[in-house]
Every structure is written in C-alpha cells, then in structure tokens.
Image 1 (cartoon, rainbow, N blue to C red):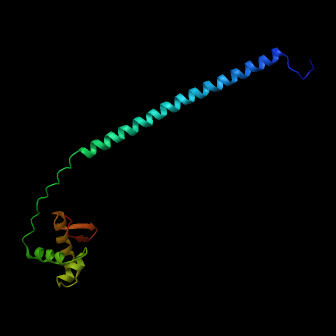
Image 2 (cartoon, rainbow, N blue to C red):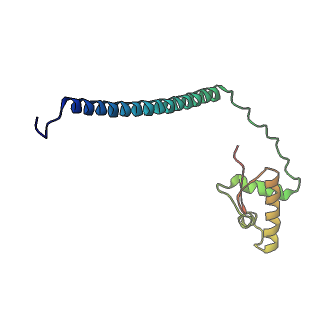
Length: 140
C-alpha cells in the first residue's frame, strides 16, 4: 500500500464517523419535524376555534332593534318653524342658514338663539349634530 491509500480499518472508521454524522443530522431533522408538527397542530386548532366561533356568531339571532321613544318637540312655535326648515332641507344646516330660511335678521343674538334651540333639539334626539354647529335630521 502506498501513503495515499487508506487501509480497510481507516476506511471503516471514516464510514462509521460519517454514519454518526448522518444519524445526528437525521435526529436533528426529526426534532425539527416534531417542532413543526406541534406548531402546525396549534395553527389547526386556532383555525378550528375561529371557525366554531364564526359559526356560533352566525347562528345567534339578531338583537332586537332598540326602541327609540319619540322625543317630544317643545311647544313653542319657533321649534315647529325650525323643524319645517329641516324637513325642506337636503343638507345639514348651521344656525345662520336656519336664520336665513326663517327670514330672521342675521344678527348675533338671533343666530345664538337659533343655535341654542338647535342644541336643545339635538339633546332630545330630534336633530343630530353631525359636527360642531352642523345639524340635520337623524337617520332612522
């Protein structure tokens, strides 16, 4: 035998070493497969719980619509006039626009009085204040 040749014992030792390396890699792969399998089972369980929750929610009866008591409009004729303006309006209105529709003088006192009435109607649910100072009839 020459110096570059392996003896049968050395060859068998290298094969044994390689076999141990492959076995260790296989064991690592098995452990990783076990981890991934557990992770997959967790995902499947979570998905099934979501399906059950969705099914349960879809089977629930619709809640009854809240009964809204009709708010009583104040007796003062100004409120009926204001409501007539909103019945004819096709967009939300500010106090100044209501004054113009009622042919009131555009004066700070008139605008403030109308604004107070609009706020009162909004508090009672007769009107809705969609944004600061902008009023409209509430949607059913």
